[in-house]
Image (cartoon, rainbow, N blue to C red; front, top):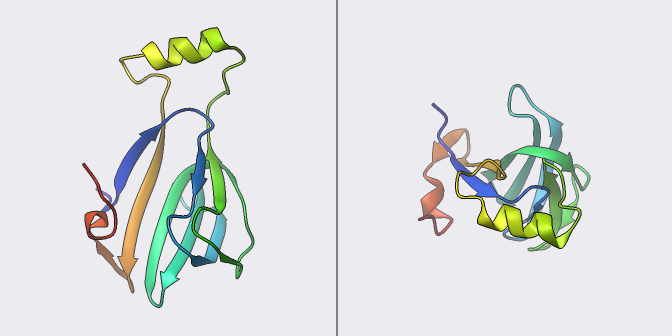
Length: 117
């Protein structure tokens, strides 16, 4: 099991930085797919995985709300498709983002940093 959380979102959702941070890594990593690792404070890392596209450059200091990447899936082409996705109850239209928080090399509960319900 992995120590992070999985967040469901719509296809092609834009993933943004929750806080000012430095980009430590971006690109494919093991079996996580495309990953962005940001450091909001010394020795604390947020690992965001499962992205179809990643943005930013390693070493770049970003603001809260800066785009980090896009989730996979296909974008709806019309209002009818948007309505159908909104009606989907089985989750087949959603994509997932994996979020892990580390203090040094130790995973910590993401709920200490994020409001997770």
